[in-house]
Image (cartoon, rainbow, N blue to C red; front, side, top):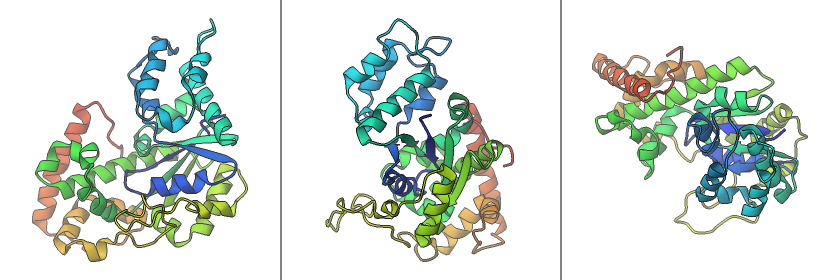
Length: 316
């Protein structure tokens, strides 16, 4: 049943690369970033109290700028709720994904939305058979990307502590996302949850893609690693993502691109998770003043999460 798989992970961790690899498989299509599936259900947008779809939800969908990613027409969607029989929200989403699969000529359809890494329990409740692929990347490389990103205000930059210390805020934001995904994935077990490391994907793409296909229950296909063919752009001003480059290791390297002070501050904030994930620290014992500063920002950061009604990982 679709949605068959959700590709999730802390933003700027390689979810787009992974989406392109999986979408190149002849049996699997991956919708690019819906964002609304979890949010609308949580807030009951366009739904009756018992979770049935209304016309309001359909029009919300048409007005959403990401609707075009489904590549289906308005009339096809309207027909889904035209009968007198009420339609549940999960059934509606499944029908949308099935329609997308027909357009793409593929039987299995998934979704790539990084932020769903914080919504795994809800999505699992809606779609009990859906699988989750969680891609994890060294947080120091994520921090390099976020702190130089013009859309940081849609990620770690949303938090009040960003104005005081963007780097430490990003470290805590990375840990928040990754820990929630891992904790929730552990509950699902290996049949429904698969964790990948970005670094291994770009250094051993063939082996990692074969393991991923095993998890998804589809045969490995070499087309997955040729996702870029026919789409590459020669413009030197474009980054690797927009230029549709093939898999390219070393696009960011915190070892050469971060100052020692920034490395020390990041590791003071999220060093324990780096250890758990097998990423060696460069500064195993950060200076006391950096630990004190990080602790203060940590308390403000987690308090803001709770104030917004969001979950904090159990083991943090």
